[in-house]
Image (cartoon, rainbow, N blue to C red):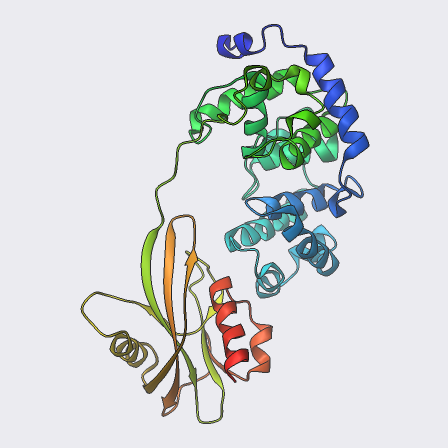
Length: 364
């Protein structure tokens, strides 16, 4: 028995907390498309999409994705390029690839039935403790914790947990607490209630404490410390990476695009030719040299048409975008393509390069 958790739950009325939370959730839950039934596949897709993405953003993506890939078999048999295109704009594309890889394993190993065993589901690619807990509890009504940042924020306030939620060691405390207080009778509503509470009531800033259904259980509210919790150390600022991009057309008016490597950041997505800049050289000169080395052709670099930043969790791309003309020929094959303007829509681009496509529309 974890002594720290036992101390945190001293005098905490678990049964009343469960009743208050679940009653509120059943009365006030939002109408979301993945809540229409308890299909574990739909729940799985939604949970992967919802990681670090707002609900309002996810809804149309989820509906389009499920329309295109309505079953385990449909996603397992799909071309990766079609999956990435359907995911385009959500970011974190490795999640889409991991999802398809894991779905293929479910199709092949488990006869297209998502495992309801904690050990088996945890082995699937891209399924961490939170996603496993969410699927098991929501789809199969198994009392497994589903602890993410929102749930840690809620619990830190309710129980007065002054641990840094950014530290992996703290997650164990929150998972153990959840395992102790989760409803055995209705873990699905309990976990979804915790998620809902964090989304619409116990928000990061200015929580709506007076509307909270579990206010009577909340130590932070009693102590007036709800604005101080949770404790969360700041991440390092993303590293700036200056990049020059060129939108190149050949004499027929076709655009040059290339496919990124199948491993690493934004793997297998398409983009316009670009180069990470080094100090001490003109951007245009570095672009010309890069194009010559990569595509064996000369180019005329013309006007700058855009400059913007695109931030990842660890990197900040500082993009300068030019237009240019190919002088000579480039072979359209493999990972290099020459495509018409209308054909650009068929390829999955990362968000930064989608902005460049939009800039082309404006400048032509």
